[in-house]
Image 1 (spheres, rainbow, N blue to C red):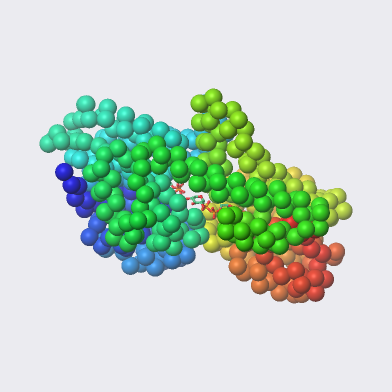
Image 2 (tube, rainbow, N blue to C red):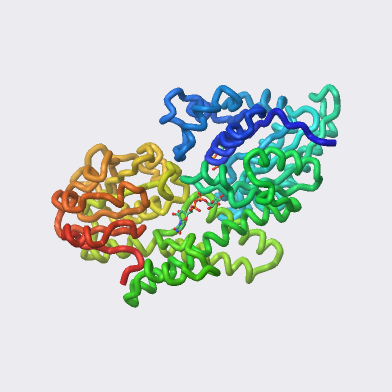
Length: 471
Ligand code: UDX
Ligand code: ADP
């Protein structure tokens, strides 16, 4: 039997669900695509008339929303109705690392996946393909299948009684900040499943804009595991180069020269070799933690120890930045003002999950300094939530460890003793350092954790300068 997919529902209107469905809707005008979320506020933002107020910032996204929303792409909080109407349902909900209970700090919290599967089992009708898109531990498809299959036994809501579920794994490889391009021109699409018909139904959707040779089909478990491993390998490269950045600083080598020299070897390649303040984002740490957890589960201690080191180097890299700032500022930053430029975990996104800036700011606040934070896309309320500290409207004389939000680089840097660049936003590459320096307290310092500024310009402006990986 060949599936005829006409109606798609995506549960979860987040950083993955939103852009992925927008690109499917754009490339498959004959498909009806409904993105649902229990968070009504989020859905309202996706339906905002003013496209600058969409809940996530992603270059190229608002143009697609403008083109497809209300045509064949809809955002709704009516989860029940859209599940019932769908031939294919994507699960794209959050799966953060558990903070308590069994596997805390390593295993993924699957409560949102579990409840999505239960909602599907409650409302779906007829032959339904369920696609797991969220990053999940290996064998989660099995959990989803069990929940769905159990529901068929006592199904009452499907009057025609032909309820049947097919589960596929279709992990997302988009990187935030380049999501639309990654979705339009992916290196590959991965689909794992157990039967050819349901796999083919999903392949047919992607074939609308992706060459068939880029579509890899595997069994369920290979697909789930490959997602974790792809992220683990990328993160491992970053920890490798970050460990070498410290060695460069001690020996007098320059990390950008080392990067060029080793990255020119085709076997190594030049991608993911930018040394920085440590990797952030919702995926890398979570996926490696999952890998560690399942390796331990299967008694593979050496494997889990190996990947644990990738996380440890990452944490060490972030920590050593604050240490260095304190040392350079005469071993105390108490009551000094530090300007932090960038708060998102990377440029071109407003996502702050696991952002190194959070850890750096927390470490700086611990040292009792005053921080002014500027980020072109992150809202001050989001920063308050991340730091778990309300912003001060103005700095007071006797409170230590407080922060304010600034609306520009210039505002953030007034009277600052130091500037720390934490995110590689393009506008930080073109700062007028002479102008900034005039308003800073002297001796003024710049710490460039992303190696993006022009050293000569900073030197010319007379600012003391430290950049990652430079001896
Ligand atoms: C990642 C994967 O790239 C993507 O395929 C997967 O689907 C989700 O996880 P994302 O987390 O959005 O995507 O961003 P990515 O570009 O991979 O960056 C992750 C972190 O690594 C960021 O904090 C970034 O600043 C850092 N990074 C990246 C470096 O420090 N150096 C590099 O060379 C590249
Ligand atoms: P990701 O980066 O994986 O897309 P997000 O946290 O940005 O993660 O988005 C996940 C979305 O899934 C959130 O908006 C959340 O409200 C939604 N969600 C979680 N559980 C459910 C559920 N059972 N039904 C509908 N939406 C859900």
